[in-house]
Length: 159
Image (cartoon, rainbow, N blue to C red; front, side):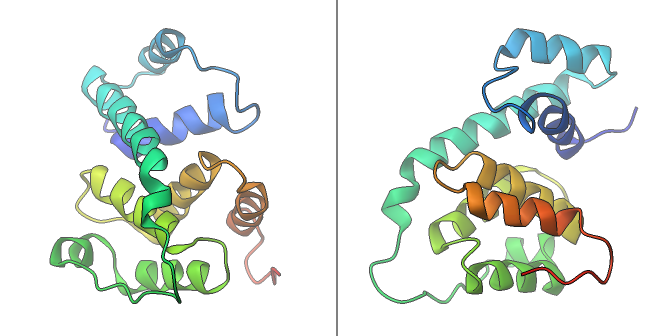
C-alpha cells in the first residue's frame, strides 16, 4: 500500500473519532486496527506523533489569541510551497467568516506542515481543519459548519 500520514489520520478520524469523541481512545487497539487495515508501522507512528503535536499545540493556543483586530498572515516560503493559492484563500475565508480564529489558523498551518507532504490539495486541507476543530473544546458550531461544508453537494449554498 502507498499511504501517507494523512491517509492514516483520515482512517483514524473516520473510524474512531468522528462519531463518539471519547470512543476508541486506546492507542494500542487503534494501532492494531491500523495494522490490520494494511497501514505501515512508520506511517502509523507519524500519525500518532501528529496527533500528539495537535494536543500539545492546543494547550498553547490561548497564548496565540490576538488582543486587537485580525492580524495579517504572511506565509513562509515553505508554507507557500505546500499550500497553493486556493488553500490559502480558503483559510482566509474561514477566518473571515469566524470559523477559525488566528490561533486556530496557526494550529491548522502547524499541523499541515507537520504532515511532511510536498503539497496538499483543498480537500486535504479541509480534513486537517476538521480534525483541528474537532480537537478544540467549545468549537462544536464551527466543526458542524465545516463538516456540512465538506459533505455538501456541489453548487449547494451554505450559510
